[in-house]
Length: 401
Ligand code: EPS
Image (cartoon, rainbow, N blue to C red; front, top):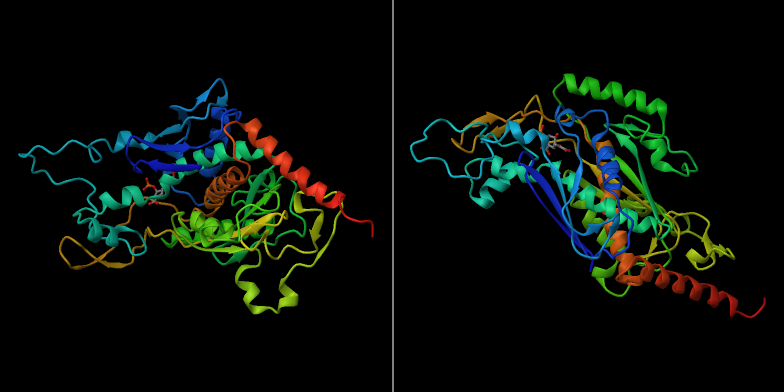
């Protein structure tokens, strides 16, 4: 079973991911991970923190001579900002005679953040004990874990990209045919949109919202190509791939919704306007020698991949830290207060697309390993080839029509 966990606080010394279950023999360089980490750090609308950090992975285990070796892959990313927080984040207990006021204590809890529910649940006095871990800084090492999964998937012919389709009330026009290398085009845009006119309006809007001390959300679309028909399963609720993608993507900080294919729009249409008609496509092994005339299902039917591209939309709410704060309650006194206003971003929607790619890569790698599992990349490639050969045999064995 492929799995990963992360550890680390936003202003602690480092962030760590441990990815376990990756086969041996997957080519992997630190640069493969660093490229993805850098993509996550881009995007118009980020705050000053992104100028402090230059995220770089340090492999602690699981990789030798440019290849995975089958053991848990531990990856560490240092927080450069930590040097400004050493005293505040110090794990050592305070001296008993130290009565100086604690620095950067957060008691004016921010509406929409984990601050209030976290201090009540974990019985803390300082919401910093909550916000340090709830922070989306943690997604740095999710992207590291996803980058390894992405290398594995690439070796099996699977590619993942994303672009921003909506930001702060402005829709981007999506071309009828997406660029073959989606990220090469979307990453060239400051807001990762494929529509230059919408991009210019979004940038002006972010500037305006920043001046107003407010924040913005938006929607990204993730597209996966090269997945063969039949990943996931219809047989049990927890094996359905759409449900598993939903869980992985909804776990991203500030994500509030996930749509697969047409998503909520399917509920407004008739069956004839929703379901994708099927036609023969000899030679299209990956989908079982058929083609959908449209891909409104977004590449999933019955909780299984169809062989068409996987298309997922992920919606993010606006950042919960507002420079013009909302009303709240001070948990130290119970009094009415304005929420804490710390340095933050106006929007992180372009970065969220990169994080959504990483979580999607993890779920797809898990599903590929379930179906084609092996201890080495070569073994997995052989199992995939045998399955594809069987899909060919099914067609070859048919009577002539
Ligand atoms: C975040 C608040 C900001 C963001 C941070 C997420 O950090 P800080 O409080 O240090 O200014 O910059 O995102 C990152 C550091 C990152 O790497 O994405 C939050 O509260 O979620």
